[in-house]
Picture 1 (cartoon, helix red, strand yellow):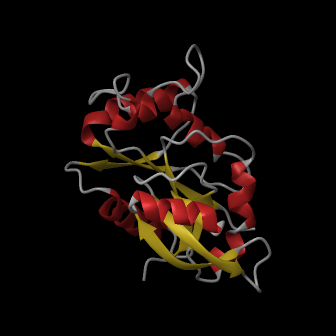
Picture 2 (picture 1 turned 180 degrees about the vertical axis):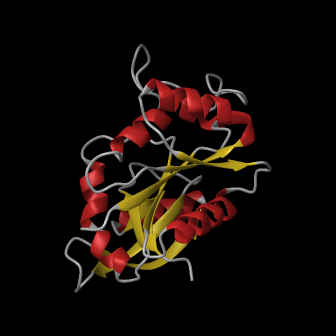
Picture 3 (picture 1 turned 60 degrees about the vertical axis):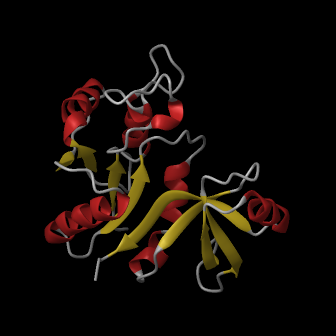
Amino acid sequence: MSAIYPLVMCGGVGMRLWPLSRLDTPKQFHRVDGGSSLSFFQATVERHSGEGFRRPYVSVGERYETLVRAQLNAIGRDAELIIERTARRTGPAVLAAALAVNAHDPEAVMAVLPSDHLIEGDFSSVILDMLKPAQDGRIVLFGIEPGYPEVGYGYIIDSGANAVYPGARNVSHFIEKPARSVAEELLASGNAYWASGVSLFVRIY
């Protein structure tokens, strides 16, 4: 089985955890459970460091390069760092990383992984189970079952089970940060998921 290149995204300022999260120490670098637990960033790296995953790439803003290196060193992990001299948000950061990974391995499958999520369970196995559709040229997205009508997230609209890939479902369309009335309708429909920001794909052109 081919291995997946994790791309850990940690260039954001992480203001959702404010006031604990500040410009110099955004959410992804804080400990998940306090005390001696791993940070959100460290937990993301560890989660996808096992069998089936290659050495990770980390996309990080220049401001946080030293912090990223220190947190990687603390857990004994190494990574290929892609330093953002100027913040350009998610799309350009993913493109830059995809170009770097593609230059190293044109057949690479890359998993885009936000570094500020709290994830329980064996999420690595979920991603590995979707390797085949990604290798076949599909862009695989991972949704979260919504718990309430959040208006600050994007939604993935499900159009039914995929007939080719067990466990996969088809995407109808996306709705980005809907009005509350629309979010309530999406929640009631049972076929909408919060967009997690996690994706899996091969090639960039």
